[in-house]
Length: 243
Image (tube, rainbow, N blue to C red; front, top):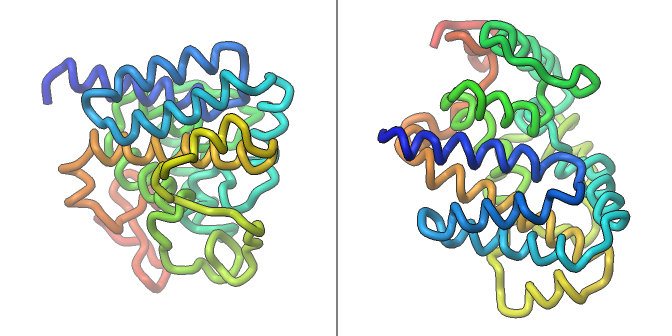
């Protein structure tokens, strides 16, 4: 892949990281830059980011921050943790977090230790800094597909996403394309509904962008979410095996 394409990947990952963090005054400009970068390489993703950007522009920062907290931190369907999305609250999430810490340490990557190592914004920041394509394909894309409803992976024993014990927020929609009128709803609808749709648009735009920019690897590795790291995986019995 040409260097310019690699640079584009890393720059977008860095911008997506910022958009997935707590909103601030710079969020509008970051969204606009993402929209511009995606306009030619993945127009559909750019449309979703544009919808999110318009919501940012029309919404007071205090409401944005409240909506962010409600959508990500109080909503188990979109809990922003890689391990939770892939494995639920099982030992496999703990294994993943240890594997991530090993990768971070080996790369000299530092992050805010008040955050868990599998928070998606932390993982994305690391992938941007390190160029870790496997983590994007085997971790971030499957997690985002689950969060946006594009793919429902097998339940993880009722203690995580899509399992029997996972709450489903009433009226929560996933993965729908931007239909006529959605921008009006995002900018003029109710505070709760429009905010939810805006953050869903953000997640969908990021997912589409990653799928477009990592297509070859995704075709090879589809259905193989990251778990053990460093060449180790688990079979169906839960035993470690070499990849």
